[in-house]
Image 1 (tube, rainbow, N blue to C red):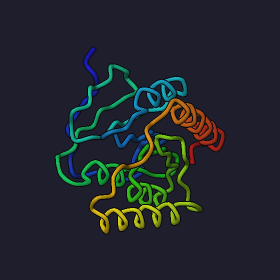
Image 2: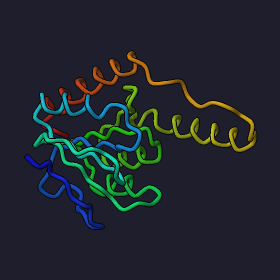
Image 3: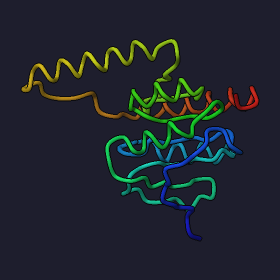
Length: 171
């Protein structure tokens, strides 16, 4: 069975004939397998979006979307299509802002929910850290590594979001 895989075009209409999709900003996402497992259990479609290098899934609910190479092309593709009732998995804070504005639920891979109430602080912290790194070229290290506890938190958070969306009719 050949997985559903296609090259993304430039178009796309938000909300046209689709509801309840999980979008994964797939580049460097450590929880793709977990999303697929939970989505399958809930019967929710998944779109794994990247500019390549991702092995397609044989799962009929999972679509691998390959976008053109270039800065933020996967982010742009997701943001143009996401809407209320959808879930976005991303560590990219500017993408999270756009998805929240479109009405989607957003989770970071460590299970942290990004919401209209906390996204301003998260974005400000991101910008501050970028400024600190730029001011000190010798500053070493990044964030902490991805742990089993992060994976467990993510699974719990995704389950809660999907149950909430199912209970509210998707939006």
